[in-house]
Amino acid sequence: MGELPAPESPYDILGGADAVRRLTEAFYDAMEAHEPALAAIHQTDAEGRIKPEVRQRFGLFLVGWLGGPQDYSARYGHPRLRMRHARVRVGVEMRDAWVRSMTRAMDACGVEGQVRRFLDARFSEVATFLMNVEE
Ligand code: HEM
Image 1 (tube, rainbow, N blue to C red):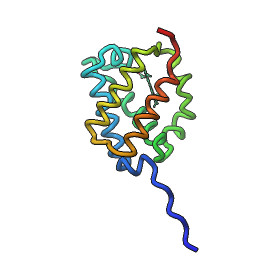
Image 2: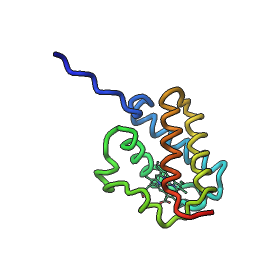
Image 3: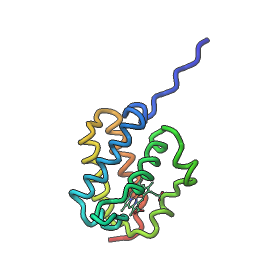
Image 4: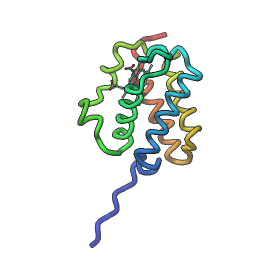
């Protein structure tokens, strides 16, 4: 009996590391262009752009979270997202701004079909889970 093929992860379906990197860049570019209040709570450089380190850490997290190599956890430990967001006030406005930025990024990268429906649902679920203030 042959082995069953491993099911494809969202990471594979999107197109691997380069595709996830492009999605990450598109996400922060959309945030900078359209969601100034959300961009402003991130670490920025002298020109007011979200720092490359921030983009890089989130990109590495996304790779693992989507089912690719687990380099984020190897380097930074368990994501513990709620703990890592404790210093930011996440209310409805910020949650919605975050989700809009990711929606724009997925639009820009042509993420469609079943993987898009899956990610739309998962991203809003996690963003809602990270809310830590009532507004
Ligand atoms: C709900 C609205 C959200 C807000 C307002 C928010 C805000 C932030 C901020 C301000 C940072 C710190 C960046 C810096 O160091 O300057 C951050 C980091 C991060 N966020 Fe979010 N975030 C949100 C949702 C999410 C979601 C839904 C995910 C996962 C799907 C996520 C994953 C991460 C990760 C992995 C980091 C990097 C943590 C680290 O290694 O330091 N965030 N976020």
